[in-house]
Amino acid sequence: MQEQRKVSVRVPVLTRVEGEGALELDIDNGVITNLKFSIFEPPRLFEKLLEGRDFQEVPDITARICGICPVAYQMSAVHAAEMAFGVQISPWTRALRRLLYCGEWIQSHALHIHLLAAPDFLGFEDALTMAKKFPRVVKRGLKLQSIGNRIMRVLGGRSVHPVNACAGGFYAAPPLDDMRALQAELVTAQEDAYELVRWVASLPMPDDEQDFVSVALHHPDEYPFNEGRLISDDGLDIGIAEYEAHFDEFQMAHSTALHAHLHGKPYLVGPLARVNLLHEQLPAHLLALLEGSDVQFPSRNMFHSMAARALEIAYCIDEAIRILEGYAPTDQPHVAVTPRAGTGFGCTEAPRGMLWHRYDFNADGTVKTARIVPPTSQNQARMELDLHQSLHAFGLEHDDDALRLRAEQVIRNYDPCISCATHFLRLKVNR
Image 1: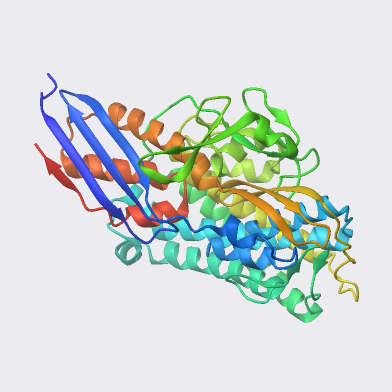
Image 2: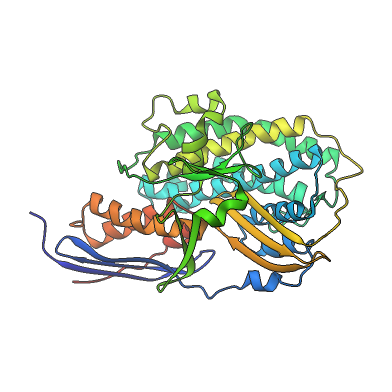
């Protein structure tokens, strides 16, 4: 018989996060009566700060929103400006933008898997403790993360908040010698990435099937980074300019980050949503790495997010090698951009999920108004629903430490920044 008790869990500060958050959980007689995952960082007002700034300043300003996925903010911004001004980029620029995105996904996913999420699945407090028993695994993860950072540094000028992207292309073409050296590094990492997929798929994962709606960009010819239509597994198929007609953002009293709904309901963006919707666009030899494991896609288990990230690392390694094989420098790394009054939309796939921008520009190319919808806020309503369902399925009779750990794992499934924070949850229980 389930213990009849009252439990009040308060996690006042989620630290080491791109944002600040907390968790409230009240349980009464085996029922969750209150659950709030709140983000309470003061508003950063980036959209207001952008007003009046030149369109070419926007990519470098928005990149400062996130230290983990600055490329995504840059890419959504440059695509929006190019749409508003009618700019056609070159195939050379398009390929290098995909390569830059590969670097961001590799470094972000490798960080999340090895330093944040994997210790939970193996019963370690943190990655340093895990490294004592699994040194090769952690070294492999750091090597992969380093290669992702190197891609961003070679193409973007630096690995954190790169500065080489602009509307129309890139300010400068990467030197051929640097790109050839990068290609050689990626070839040596290819088997490491494949081993990572097999290793992640072999980890013990909770059986926690849930119903949720996955949303991602879809491009008919390739696994999407920068371009495509927005699709979902419940029938959504729209152009990115139609986003505001289908998605709602709204304020909740317990969070300074806006919640988001699709047609009135929570939804999922990020690696699991992408792989669920687009696994048929991944090469067969990568999906074959999952054979013999319990992880198959599409999946209704959010704990399979880590396997989705590992698959995307392997995809990005392969894709980066493919792009680099055809690389040649150019003396025209960007096309001319002539601003005009208008509205532009940009939507790309950040490591954590779909990132949507809209800008209204004045005739001189300065920003009139801006709107930015990041993946973390889109997932917040889904995270709360997942926490509610997962903790019920896990069993509310578990002791406080077990409930705290399960809540942390659920949150970590969604976002490397939030996952980082929840490794340091402090738990206070009132009975």
